[in-house]
Structure formats: C-alpha cells, structure tokens
Amino acid sequence: MDLQHLKYFQTVARLEHMTYAAQELHIAQPALSVIISRMEEQLGVPLFDRQGRRIKLNQYGRIYLGKVNEALHALEEGQRQLSDLAGIEKATISIAATTLNRFSNMLGPYLAAHPQANFRIMQTPTEDMKIQLLQSGEIDFVFAAPPITADGIAGSNLLTEEIMLAVPPQHRLARRSSIRLSEAADEPFISLKPGYSFRDLTFSYCAAAGFVPRVVCEGDEPTSIGSLVAAGLGVAFLPAAARRNHGPLVFLSIEEPVCMRTMQLAWLEGRYVSGAARSFRDFAINYYASGQDKLSLD
Image 1 (tube, helix red, strand yellow):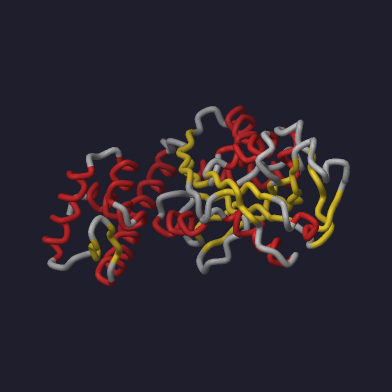
Image 2 (tube, rainbow, N blue to C red):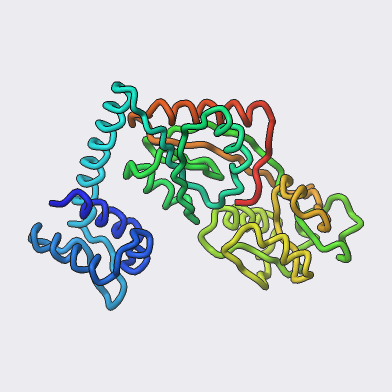
C-alpha cells in the first residue's frame, strides 16, 4: 500500500467528503476517488458507505483508520527521533486553530528567538476536528477553547478571559458599562455558524439567562463579527481582547451569568515531541503566563 495513499485515506476519513478532501490535498477529485476505490479493492472490503455524493466511514473503515493512524504515527515519530539524534531537526511545528489571530502575536517573538523554525498551520472550525488531527498524529498542537478533556490528550491552560457583549455606539445600551444578559434577550444577534466552539459556549450563556438568541446574521470568519456589529446589524459576543481591534464598538460587561472562556494549548500524550515542538510549547506557556498578550475571537 502506497504511503501517500494512506495519508489520502486519512484525510478522506477525517472529512468524510471526497471533494473537500481533494481540495485540501491539492489533488483532482476523480483521481482521489480512484485511489480510494483501488485501496478498497486491495483490502477486499468497502471503507465507506456511499449515499449519492455523501460518504461515511463504516465499521471496516474505522478499524482500518485506527491502524493507519498508528502506522503513520510510528513512522513520523521515528523520523523525528532520527532527525533529533542526527542534529538535522528541520524545526517544523504543526498547529491547528480556528483562526490565526488566536496566537499570531506570539509568533513574531518566537521566530525572533528561533529564526530557523517553520510552522505548518491548519485552520479547523471545530474542536472535534482538532481532536482527530491530534489523534491521527497529523499535528503537534491545537489551540482549544474550551479546553479538551478527551482521553489521551494533555494540555496547559494559557489564559482565561472575559466574554463581553458588543453593541454599536448608537445602541440603546451603549451608555451602560454592564448588563444582565437577560436584558439583551430581544436583541438581534450576530453569530458564528453552527460548529464553532465560541458559538456553543455563548449560546449556553444565553440558555442560562433564559432565552434563545435571535440570530439575524451568521458568518464563518470570526474577525468579521465586530464589523457587522459596527454596521448596525445587531449585537454580538466578543472576548474582551477584541476591544483593541474594534474601537468604535461599545463593550458591555455581563454581570449575570458570568461569561468567561479558557484557552488551552493541547497535545497528544505519549507522542514523541521534537526539540522544536518542545521549545514552542515552553515558549507559549511562558508567553501567556507572563501576560504579554490576550487572545482574540475564535
């Protein structure tokens, strides 16, 4: 079985969508379909259940994926260990995060101290996908909020920050400094699309306040939320750190319920960690422990 084809299967299994997998892998979709079909022929069993254009990993696929993950993980660890021992570490650090602004301010100081380092960054909208990437060995770290509690995953909480309600400057609540969240129950809300952890977290706060937010606009780019609020489309939840990027907006503290989120750097327990990855992990933990930065919306 071709090693590259196993990586292709790994990606298709994670996304369960042939077209999306082909786009991520930079390969033609028909060619990818042929590779997966030939793999199934060699194994003698189907790896996916097919319903029209939709595919879903079946019981054979799940078993095989586990073995593929183990094999690729072992090969990657062997390469990392040999590189470290030979002193030819290429210093590539792979990270998954929802948006780059979660940690972009930290990369400059790190690269200044470690100019030979290289980053491979994957943008993923959900925490479940980040967990899959960790478990498959495709990445070294994820930035997660809320913290991941899955078995076999370790992590360090980097910071906890306040979540606030952002309103346009002409809004009826703009002269207030704080509110009870229930006071915004009838407001139009701007939100991220379903699947984002920040949306799930803030909707849970609305539930605690006794209402379901009336969402009038959804987006898949976290950095655009503040701009839509400024345009007067509605109100939105934003972390306190977003105040530095959205000057015209008014940020209200939420008295009840308490609205906070914790940010975590997570990694797979028991996995070999290269010298470059260890260096980055230590730097990230110390960077946020010293209060040098605050994270933006994710």
